[in-house]
Length: 162
Picture 1 (cartoon, rainbow, N blue to C red):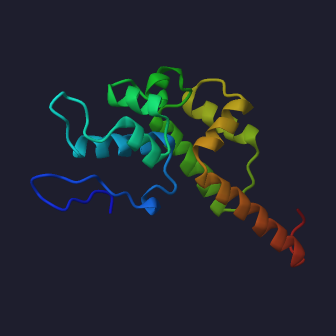
Picture 2: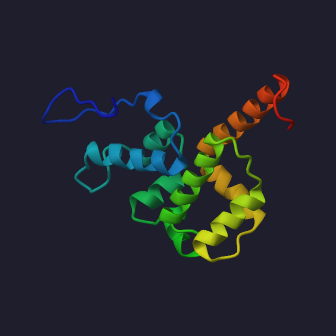
């Protein structure tokens, strides 16, 4: 459970389950820290009851970044949205295509991913973009590993050559 309170009128400090943090990206952790700080309320002077220092330590994020986001600064992703080669919908379509290729045991080279991304967006895509894309989508690593494992297994069983 993310939020807990012992009384209804005066909320106590929030206890965070470490399992709730597993697999979260830094921006998600920051948003969770902000939610906890807001949920715990504010002092008479307008400062949050839960300090930035405490929240930053609890969620393992930078205090400076947490303070900036709390005060309304855009996240890195939001701030650079105009520079993205693919919008969110196009990137989701690319992820779906890569996963479908993985399920069909079709090996993908970064140049194939770049070519498909270019077809979707109409913008030239470099291999560096593909590497950053793969970092943004770690769920695709499992597809790639499964693909290699199944190909190796077929080869060992005397099936098709690699």
